[in-house]
Image (cartoon, rainbow, N blue to C red; front, side, top):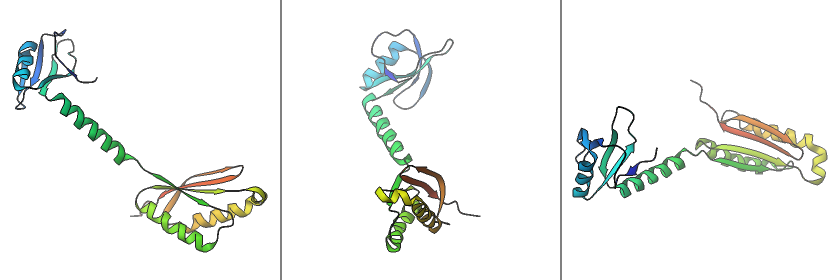
Length: 171
């Protein structure tokens, strides 16, 4: 349930109140709680509707500040929980030096906790020699042994995809 500000008459008469000084009052008339909030220049915010033999929980706070702070922390939590998936593209005829250069970046991504998606696309005549590309991708994945472990492997008509995540350290 979304918290709301009590401004007018409500269906319930009494509330449990947390006042400005964070003191808890077990049973207060709604009108008195509203007056306390008005005197303090703040809002009376209800955090839950009352159940059968219980009272609603209300708090005297600045609702605008509270809402802003919650939105800010929610965005921060969402952005910190995201685990990025970095894609690295290879060609079936990629050179050894190019593979080494790309693998340096892959190892950095894995150390940062990101997942890495290797993709190899076949174009034109390369589609006839799918086996060569498959062998090359296996070589590349073998070079990552110890630092990354394969999570998912997928082969479609003109593409091979391998997903890696950071390898778990052995104890």
